[in-house]
Length: 111
Image 1: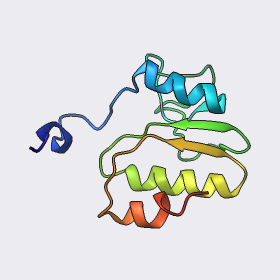
Image 2: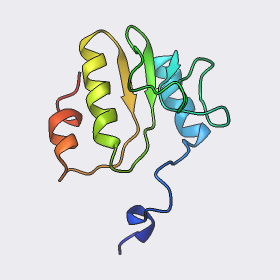
Image 3: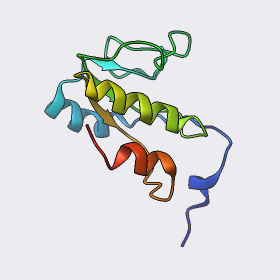
């Protein structure tokens, strides 16, 4: 059975369920939500669309990232990888798209 909701393009943003976030936050104590807005940010310090988290520094923070799931996800994954090399800890909530370039270039490499 295929979940067609996974393949729609009505929106590229998916809110993180609070109980899901809370489990990870208990382990990592996040300091920065790198792609959020005033209604869905998970921690006090966050970057919204106007701040453009892709051009902001993330290191040395412990970061939560639930990026837009559209064509720009590769840019976010590259940024997460690059910032991890600079000292950021980045936990990413992304779809398991194991057939994509961004998955092979960044997701399976880790930080």
